[in-house]
Length: 160
Image 1 (tube, helix red, strand yellow):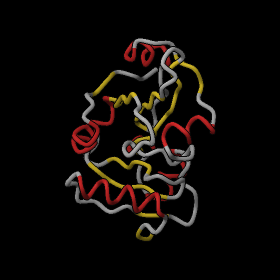
Image 2 (cartoon, helix red, strand yellow):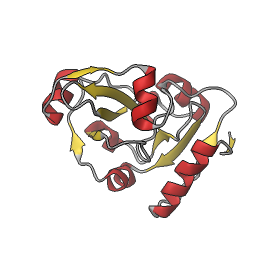
Image 3 (cartoon, rainbow, N blue to C red):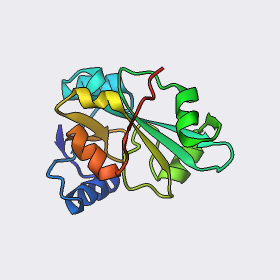
Image 4 (cartoon, rainbow, N blue to C red):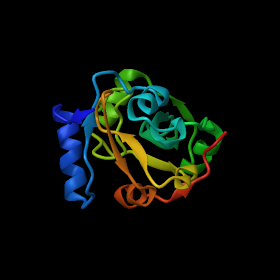
């Protein structure tokens, strides 16, 4: 683990600083694309990873990002109900265009375009969670309450 150096990770660090969140964005030599990879690199449980799952709203064409506990499967039906539109899978090109990030590095903030965002209520189980910081190699820790305040989104039941 080392301090962030990638431009995308540094941008996330700046956005966090501007939001008043005192945390450090770190990078790893090994990828942290999946919840299991991130948990192994950090030394925490898979559940403490705040993974970003991206869908495409079929009517709006907008990205729908669910920030979920790493041990949860996301219910597409529950998410579709929360955002009031059917969902489709988001391919890698859509994810990059809509969020500005590659799959495995989608941060919960600083998106390229407006997105619909949902937070998994199960993240509240932990004192600290770890979110992607713009690259598949970078993450940052924050409290669930900081995550909620940062995104301005309330908690939702999204678990399958």
